[in-house]
Length: 487
Image (cartoon, rainbow, N blue to C red; front, side, top):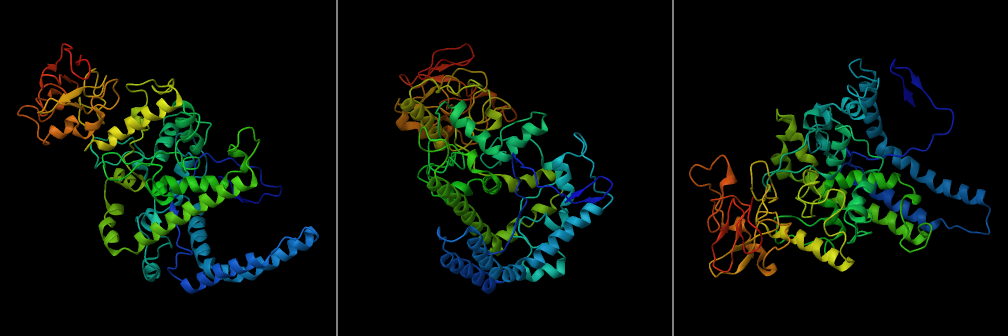
C-alpha cells in the first residue's frame, strides 16, 4: 500500500522489490504472549504451535505440493486463535495510524530539511497516547483511550541532541543515537547499524574479528564503566549483554530478523556462506535475545514501584529528558563514544592496531579495565570528560601519569590512555579517589586549577614523582614519575 502526498491510496500490483534497511528504531514494545491480558489463550496457541511442529514431518518421497498442503493445514488450525488474540490490537493500532495519515496536519511530502523519514514517523505517533514509558494496564485501556503496549521508546523531536556527559549519573548517547547523529549532521553512512558497530572491531581496532561471545550479533562490549562489581564482557549471559542497551538491542534484533543469510560471514575460513547449522544458531540466538528482553520488559511493566518512579517522564516540560529512555550503560569500551572519536588517539586506526594480536587484546582490556576501576568520570579541563586530560601530557590522560600515595607507591592516575599508566596492581587508587568532591576556594567554577597530594591545586594533567612522593610536573612541563608533566 502507498499513500501519495494528495492522500490518494495506491496498491502495488507487481512483486515487492527487495528492501535494505540500515537501522530500526523500536518505538513500541507490545504485550502479546507475555501472559498479561489473555494468558490461557496464549498458552494454548504456544502449545498448539509445538504440537503442530512435532506432527509435521518433511518426507523427501512425498511431492512438494502435498508437503505444502500439509503445512498450510497446520497453520490454518492456529489462525483462528491468533485472530482472537491479536485482532483487536491490530484494529486499534491500524486505526490510529490511519487517523494520523488522513489528518491534514500530517505532512506526507518528503523534504530533506522539513519532513525527513524520522520527522514523518514522529508525526504518526501521538505523544498523549504513546509517550508514557510504561504502557497502560489492560484494565485501564478503555478508560484512557490508550493503545496496548508494554514499553515506549517514543521521544519528542527536542530530544535529538548530542548529550554532554560529565558524571556517571548522566546518560550518554546510545549506539543507535550516535548512528543517527551522523545522519542529522549530513553524513550519509552506507553501512547499516550492525556493520557500523562491527567496524570498531574489524577495522578501527585492527583485531580483524570480534573478541567476545555474542559480539558477532550484538557488536558492543557490555562491560560497565565506574562499577567494580559489574563483571566484564565474555563472562556475561546473553540477557546481560542485550539488557546493557535495551533500546539498541530491540532495534538490532529487528534488523537481524530482516537481514538475509548472505549478510553474515561464515565462521569457517574459506567457506562462501554460513552452513545450515551456523544459520540456525544465528536465528536462535537472535530469538533468545528477544525473549530475554521481553521477559525483562514484562517484569518492568508489572512493577508498581517502577511505574510510579517513571510516571513523570512523559509529562516533563523539557523534551530533552525524553531521551533518558534510550540510554544504556556507561561503556568501558575504549574510545567507543562519539565524543571520543579523534581525541588523543588516531582517528582512522586504534593506537594498539599495529601490535601483535595478543598485545592488541591485552592493551584493549587494560584500557577498558582502567575505566571500570575509576569511581566516576574524572573532571579535567573545562569541557573535558572521562579523564582525557585536556592538552596536557601528564597524569590526567596524556602520556599517562603516576600519582604517589603516602607510602611512595606508584599509583595509576586518572588518565587511561597513557604510555606509562603506573602500577597495574593499584589502578583502583586513581587520582580521583583523593578528591572529596569539593573544589578549593576560588576554584568552584573552573576545575582546571587542580591537585595537591590527591586533592586539587594545579591541573589534573600533572605528573607526580612516586620516588619522593610529591614532586609535581607543573605547567612548564616538569618530569613526573609516571609521565611527562603538562604543557
